[in-house]
Image (cartoon, rainbow, N blue to C red; front, side, top):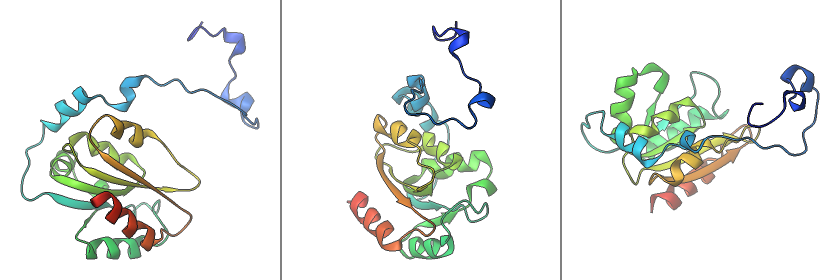
Length: 171
């Protein structure tokens, strides 16, 4: 049996497609949330160059960010953040970028995997659409000296909410 569960108790995705689940458990190994040792290893890989940066990871090229992404980009730029399109940057350069960044604002996505390279004390504002909220980067931040702040939005990201979050977590 897998995880001690008899095969006849398992339900395939195809057979459950139209089902409604009232309660479920999702076992995930603790290592998935990145231990201090994992961070220490990855933090030591890239060379740090230049000043510490504040970045906004834009999803404007994928269309998966807020509907008002251009407005968000302008607002964060005015606050000293650099707008970054991570999908256009080679992985080695992403590692270097994140290792020298102390404040990150980003819609939830794979680009946040680069948190592995950030230094202790980094601030993270993770932005979610109300239709998809995921705890992964929150859980990864808990034991790794990352100051975490989530924002949930529908369609447009409220700039005043974002500015308030920046002020709150930036203290």
